[in-house]
Image (tube, rainbow over all chains, first blue to last red; front, side):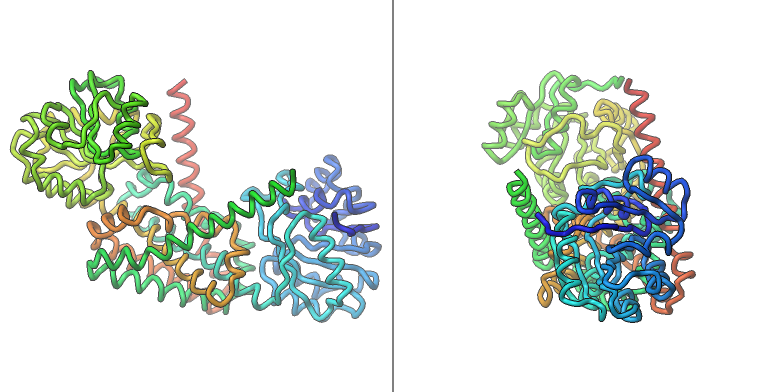
Length: 301
Length: 301
């Protein structure tokens, strides 16, 4: 049980992730306000009691809040922080964003007025379906939630943020923003680019032989899923994490080149030897995911 | 409804795919024999009435059959065909394999005695779980089943093979072996290598920062699944399709390099423009898969 409680909690951005924050924190706030530019979204959020109040005015939405959550795409978050947001907030307000890259956002936080308790966040969870209608208060449960300190993060900020993450049912992982961005480049942004380049390759083949599309099955379905990601979100992510992504791309090319050399040399035994550790690493990771899930189920029951 | 019927049908190799063939063809054969080297597998197949007879002796299993299905890894299929199998079979026997690459197998079929009705097959379906206990007569239903002619494929062979595929409930797609191998290199073997190289890259990162494993989520799970594939099966596949796979790897590198160039140049608008067609191609393909599914459901009801 978390000791976290907000008098007036505001969620800026009522997409699937923002709506889910509001739902998950319902019992931990006296009132919840949503800020969104879409009238339809605000009406939905009010009608389904996801929020108590809704507005399209950032200032009105945040000026009396003691906790503000920014649930918008990375560049929108940066614009808000670099813009007027800081002047709207009361001193001592806890400000957490949930943008997918952290270095640029945490850097932007350092221009906020002293007294704003700002800290970067990134929940490692999501759903393919966007929009408030897919909000789900359970989406953060038992999932890692990274917290990255900014120059506006005091020990008190850290404590309150940890309390909020625990209220979500998520698992706190604290690390600096640069490390976070390198890690997600490896496990998330590189995989997206591989998925996109794979689809581009198959599309090119499809120009001369459309059988590629008719024969494509489960393997291709999994490997192409990320290529269907929202482009404005991915554009922001890649544009704010270019160096780490380019570094990981170079690492990936080396690994692929090693496999290719042994493949082309037709050394079948050596190829299987080279591939064996990747198979074992994948199976070990899946096993650890499964073990965690069982532990969480046990704890929950 | 298919006009296919076998007096004595034999499945060589009682794994998940072979067991599923036997289950799916139950109503289309007077008797079904299974050939497998594992006593445990044979006992399971008999006990669950997946087959009527079981043996570990290839000759005994196939010599009276009028239809023989080879459901083994690619190199085992080639060994059987290049070995004594042809001398065991009666003239006019329909011989179909379900190996994942087709050029080497169809080439091997050309050494079979004239009179053997041999044709290559590849059902575009499967399950992650191996072994006869996961057999499922529905696994071929509405899935593409490629047929590739060999020098032993007569028009009569073709007709009987089409009838068998229709009996499985699968969708016949006929093409030559070289074309098949190029297509599956794009949609299946290239994706496998990307998955393996991704896991190798993340493993390398994991040596210095194990947070990669703790933060990895759904995107990585999908993109790493193929890396967990059975290695002896994948070794056979890659070793019998090296040229096509190497060609597709070169195509992939070009696509990835184009994306990388725009990424590193920090031209965010251009990056999204470059990625847009891959998103649309993925969504269009998923839509066509969904449409096919609905048509099949309608036809089935």
